[in-house]
Image 1 (cartoon, rainbow over the protein chains, first blue to last red):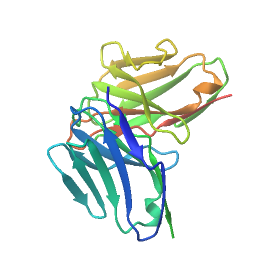
Image 2: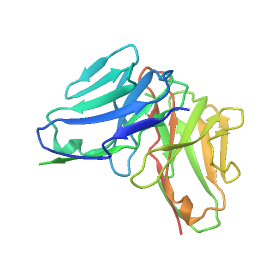
Image 3: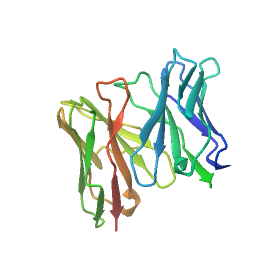
Image 4: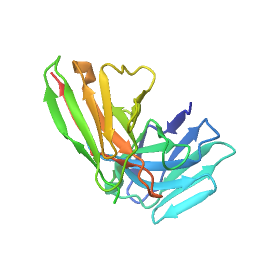
Length: 113
Length: 115
């Protein structure tokens, strides 16, 4: 089955700095990689996703990069703000619909004002 | 669109009792529902996959007789924690793949506390 590893487990940055979270996956058949933000006690919210036919995707301050050969993908948050503080999960799946997600272990991001 | 409603949001039950958690897809038909469990400060772990009209598929290590899953309709899947024990206390959350390009939608989660 798929194994998704995520690093770091905790990350603290100063407001305005960038934050980078990295994930690796094991199953080369995985082709859909979403990132979720989860605030305490709430449901995960999709913030960005990328498919295996794309190397990079950006949405305002958030970007995701994918290296299929190395089987790793990363989340980049620029100009961080205190409201970015949350737990972020990466996931891998064979397709965006119909198949389960395999989640990384999560990264607790703290943005220090 | 693509909303999954999950109830209850919080439940406290006595050890040995059963608790039912419901997930409803409000504006789409969910032929598949995934059930996850999340312990404090840990990731979401897939427990089982329910498919409408057929038996659920359980992940290794998950007791199917303890976590009963029913997916009787295209809009409703239920998870029943039977004979709950304190170690079953966790955050349970469902997720369904909607017919859209935006990927999965999660329910709001159920915080189960067994005392």
